[in-house]
Image 1 (tube, rainbow, N blue to C red):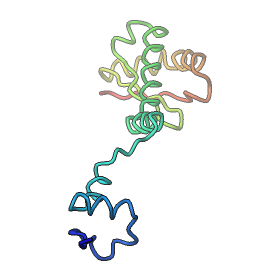
Image 2 (cartoon, rainbow, N blue to C red):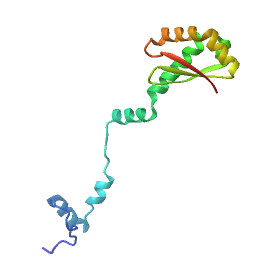
Image 3 (tube, rainbow, N blue to C red):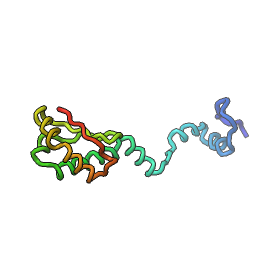
Image 4 (cartoon, one colour):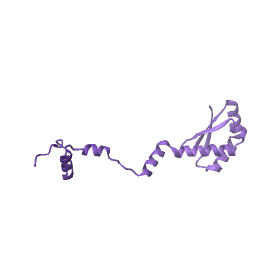
Length: 135
């Protein structure tokens, strides 16, 4: 029997009989190429949960819910000039208002009522205060 045409690279560790026979039969060792092209299957649940975590879908869904409730519960005159933009971890709801006049009016006459309605809908610990800003 002639010696194999292919010799594995030095330092490649112990060579299995299967790998040695295939390399001899093919005339070349394709194991590194096969391992590089191998499908590394992962569970779909892990991939989806990682993607959702990266996209921060939970916080976006919560923001969308707040906007929906805002548009349903708050006076249409106010919602035409003020919209919630986000909720931080401490429970502060940020609301953008068209101009300083509306901001002053909302804070002076409607802020307490708006806060109570949102707390009734989402809970006291979810929305603790509202911060109005022009923007």
